[in-house]
Image (tube, rainbow, N blue to C red; front, side, top):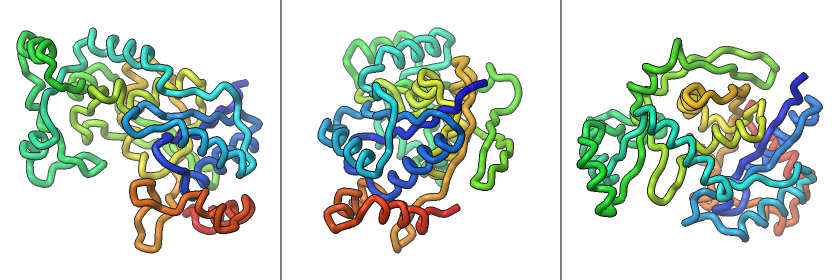
Length: 286
């Protein structure tokens, strides 16, 4: 019998807030209830924003909440070779192409109203048909570029629809059919990011044997891309569950960029781990 494996995978680019606590506590509880394993993964591939002091704070906050996880902790910064190998596999099959467009050019090219599920302007494919010689010349000249997945070619390699098993709080499971094409030709690598979140997360989940991906509902649309990449790379399909988000009084989700109160702020104000657990229980939507 397969032992269930759950994980919590924060990025050390700031301090944890209540939303992080909710996800970590939920994953740890579900792992315990299933007699499974609970893992911590540090998603520190963004070297421009991730800092060692934030990683130390993450582990300190989680320990303060009373959580335990297996060692050693996986870090994305130590797995760049794995990501490169997967990119090479996709590139050898003609599924990737270099894109030299700037964000300004992508925005200017985008058709009115056409955006990806994250709300970003949908890429029109300006570089998709670039001759190989011109692309290689751009790389040799040191022009910044990214690697994009040729979505039409990728989908042509897959038999049947892209789907996954989606769990719920009540224990029910439904089959979701996703539309990765809504993302257009997604970016899988940038100059400053050796692998995008989409690519790294599916490779890491497979490497850790994660059977149950429990994360915020804001990542629900990304699952279509993740399932496509799993199919293309021959990776196992985990079960998914996307929980509600804790929001501020204005209805916005908590975030580091919005400077939402951190667990450290709440602790400094006198909150206890039990207080945090009660807050999460009261605020987390079902």
